[in-house]
Image 1 (cartoon, rainbow, N blue to C red):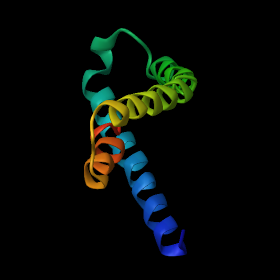
Image 2: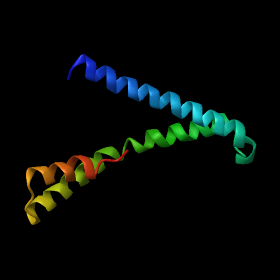
Image 3: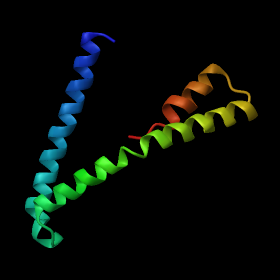
Image 4: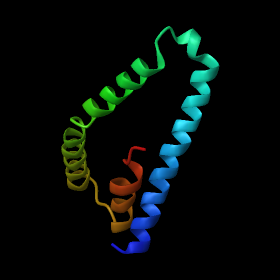
Length: 93
């Protein structure tokens, strides 16, 4: 882990936060009255859902580990195929 890599990851993360805030603000200004819920309450609900979803991550990691164990036990894979399945193919955005 280098300083440059850490800076890049942090920059992309902050850019995503800024872009999401900008797009959500525009959508709320445009469609806010049609939602029937106040923006602050919507924000609180979204934050609550994000917090609750953190409890699912350990389960997903266990399921992914078991899936990879099953795949490697039943199918002969090269190291390149294992990389694609374990790192690229099953990663959630």
